Every structure is written in structure tokens, then in C-alpha cells.
Length: 398
Image (cartoon, rainbow, N blue to C red):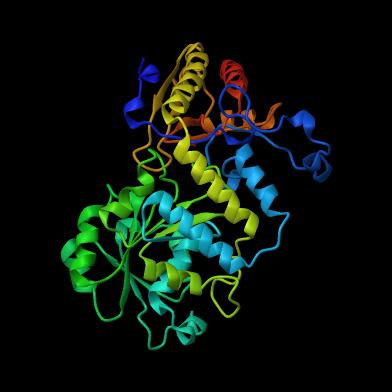
């Protein structure tokens, strides 16, 4: 069965989010918690069988991340000094010229763009988003437009859409500040990543690649910097299982310095509201170190086991088909796709999702292409059994 295929060739890695994603418990058991804050607030938690989406809290943080956060909470430091030190450590771990911690990947898009526009010029930094007299155009492939490019437009920059290489080269002018690339849309645009870098170098324009949710397989953390992109960003609260409000901006030393100059704690900057506290800086650093040390093959086997359990439960219902698959780039880890014969099961995916979400315990799953889409890496130890049992029950009753 396709759901049992071994995908170790693409070995990825994501922690077992704070609570023990892998068998053998990680994280503090719920029994140790002294106060049920969510119940007090009337907020109902759920089993996350969807994935590391921001709207659903991203991923859970690992114990080592929480330990670093707790450690940081006990001391006062100069924020700029810690920012610089954390950036140096991250750059040394990933083999890039420079790095900085941002308030999520969207923040990295804004700050990276702002830095390319202003450099270290304080007058220009203060002037943003009024780009009068400044370079103000970011060239992007039409197929790479996406909602988060609003973070680029926050700077006042204008996006110039192109389709072909010829159009891109004609679009580059004295107003061009960046060439922007959306990593998960690599297969959709005419200009692929390596060629995009080559064009940027040819014209002396920095290239920026948004790889927010693309940390798997682990070599991805260094792949696009090695390819030659001048700036690359990742989310900290997805595959890395760091604080949800963090991100990483990697790249050229001068561009990272300029991005930092546009950021908090400096006051008259576009990034003043994109504050990263000392606890988050240590937390994402701990998450990155943990990610780089982890046994990714072992985690992958665990994800396959979970997927297999859910598949077996689903296909035990007459008329239901299920398989394990890998997204091409974005969130590239095991997912389970569930479909069924509409003549035998009348329920639509939305109805199954609603029943799973409203049941006890509440379970979140997604749908895609008229099928159920179930992620397994955000499940805590033993939750795959609960998801499998409930899914079988809901399908049988539909």
C-alpha cells in the first residue's frame, strides 16, 4: 500500500513538540500543571492533526526550548548585545555570513527589504515607508505573489511582476532594490531558484528567498544560502519547534546589519513593533541547536508509524482509501490523504472535519482537493491512536 512506502530518502526532522512527539515522553506532563488557564478563559484546546500552521499555534516547544526561555527570564541584558551574540551563534551553526532573530518570517520579509532599501543610513531608516528619492521596487515573479508579500509592501516598496527571464531583466532598473523569490513556488514560476540567483548576481541586485516552512530535510537550512541567495528567511515556530513568534533571517553581513538597524530596540524604525525579547532569542537558538543534533531518521520512522496507524484505521471502513504522501516543498513531511466513494459515504470532507473538531477530545484536521489531509508531526505521544480511532468512528457513522 502506498501509505506504507518508506520515504527515508527524504529524511526530514521536526521535534516532537513540547509534550513528547516521539514515543517516550518529552515535555512536562499535564498532571504537573497547577492551573488550567485555558479552561478559565473558556478556550478549548485540540489535538493538532493538521500541521504547523500559525493560525493553529504552530508547533509545541521542546523542553530544551522552554528551559532556555526560563533561563533568560531571570536576567537583565543589553538587548542589542544579545541580538548580536545570538546572530553570531546562529550564523556559525549554519555557515552563513550573518544572521538575526526576527519576530517571525513575515517580520524577516519586512526587515530584510527595509535593510536593502536603507543600508545603515539613519535618515533613510527614519524615512520609511516614504520612499521618495530611494530605491523602491522589488521584482517578483507573478506566480510567486502570495498574501505574505504584504510584509514587503509594508516598507513602501512596490512589487513589479514578471513572468519570464527576459521580463525580469528588463524590469531591473536604478529603482530596483531586491529580487524576491518564494521558495515553495519554485515549480510554478518560469525562473527557477539557481537561475534567479544568477540573474541577481549578473545585475548586482540582492536576491531574497522566503523559505518559511521549508526546513525539512535538515540540509535545507543551508541549501539556499550555499546556492547564493543574499537573504533567506525561515519561521522559528514551525519545523524548528521554537517560539511561534520568532523567525530567522540569514545572509550577507551588510544586509543583516542593515536589517538590524531597522529593527527594535531602535525607536524610529519600521521594525520597532517587531520586538523579539531575550527569552525568545535564547529559545530559538536552543531550538536550532536541538534540530541540528536530532536523529532525523528516527523521527521519520516514528512519523511513518503514526501515518500507518491512521491509514489502517481509515481503510478499515468500506469505500475509504488512504495513503501517505509528501508535499513537494512546503511542510515536507508525512501526511495522510483520505478519500472515499461518495456513493457509499455521503459525507463531504467539511462534515468529517466538523465532527472531528466538535467531538471529545477535539481533533483538528484539514482538507485539500476534496480529501482529508492529516498531518502527523504535531501529534504528541499516543495521540495517533486517538486520531485513528475517532476517524474510523466518524467515517463509519457518515
